[in-house]
Length: 197
Image (cartoon, rainbow, N blue to C red):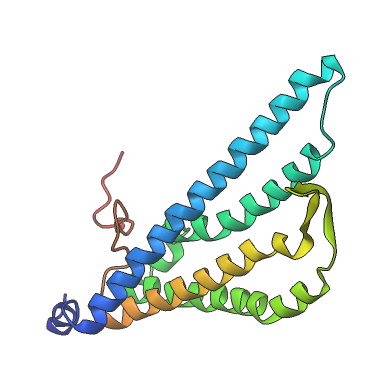
């Protein structure tokens, strides 16, 4: 590690980036928990439907809510999967070019992801504006139905958080900080240090 990198790790900018990275990972845990909760409720609804079927009992709102929870699970999972699985990558070609190849693929990946989430965020107001009406059968207290735009809110949140996480990672690159700062996350071992099985 260069002297500049070592010095940068103790700078106010580095402290801010590390704190922001920790917050994003905390939000990732929250979103992963929301995914688990959605899945648990979906499983409960499905089990209730199966158990009640022989008794000719059921609730018509179960299927719409199961679909809503599936959408929410997918969109909350969008950010959770990204923040905790960035180290899952096919990098054998990049490794042929050493550290510069790895850095280039990291930058290319960030540019691609920022482009995708940028388009999602840019079009989000238009998407939300056409999502009028209710989700048929997704009942709320007071016999109201869930507004259709609420399906897209987790996608908007995940997209914004992914964009922020990419910018934080770019800041880590500039400051010479390690790619993974949080609990249990370390960069994949290099081809030279990986032990044969």
